[in-house]
Length: 193
Image (tube, rainbow, N blue to C red; front, side):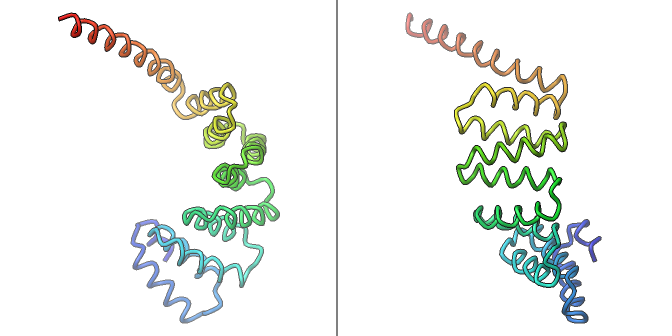
């Protein structure tokens, strides 16, 4: 059944999990996996319902908490997302992914200091976690710490693209400045005629 999700046959996977739940109505795994299928289809509310059922049966399932948090975030409910991420971190405190998505939720809520703390912690766990550098860059920019933001953005580019990333970072501003001068000169020539 889970292989159907991998094949993106979400409707068929959901039907298979419906059947599994008919045969074994207290299967936390079936609820969780059907929630994954609903989330993959973009039906966050049904995914939340299924993750909640899975958590009712196995309250300490960090993966179900993490995925329900993602589903809440997709609906724009960052408060509940943060709550689920925090519970997941109580179970698995060194999960850099959960720390990073909680940091994103804090950023969305405007709590940039807490977001940066989560990204810092994620980067202590995994110093090459580009996602955390990229998202921490955004939190710093929204906080007005543009130097720190540019530094993190550069690290993200380097981790994602290597030398090419740094080249892009340098080339785009130079190109933009060059085009600006060219447009200014073109306008001067057009105005002179």
